[in-house]
Image 1: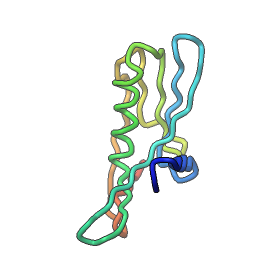
Image 2: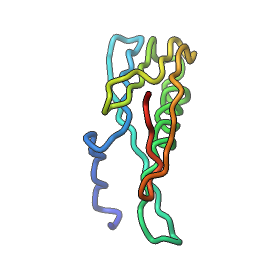
Image 3: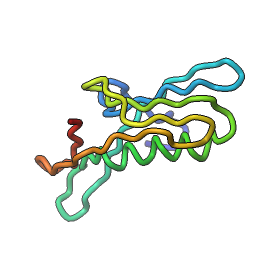
Length: 110
C-alpha cells in the first residue's frame, strides 16, 4: 500500500470488545477494539484479545482522560460488561480468562 492510498477501516463485526463513551459535552461514541499481530517465525497473523482490551483501555484512560463522564466496555459476543469507568476512574472490572486457540489468544467471559 503506498502513501496515497487510504488504509481500510477496521471491521466492527470482527471486534471482540466495544466501548460506549458518554462525553461531558453530551456526545456519545462507540469504539470497537481488536488486535492482530504478525508472527514472523510462523509467518502468520495472530489475534490477541488481551492486547485488544488493553488498547481500548488506553484509549479511554489516556486519550479521553478528563473528557468523559462514563465509559462502559462490553464483550461484544456475550454483551457482558467487562469494565466501567467514571470520571477517569476504573470503577468495575470483570476478571477474564484467556486461552490459546489455533494461534490466537482468545478471551472467555464467565
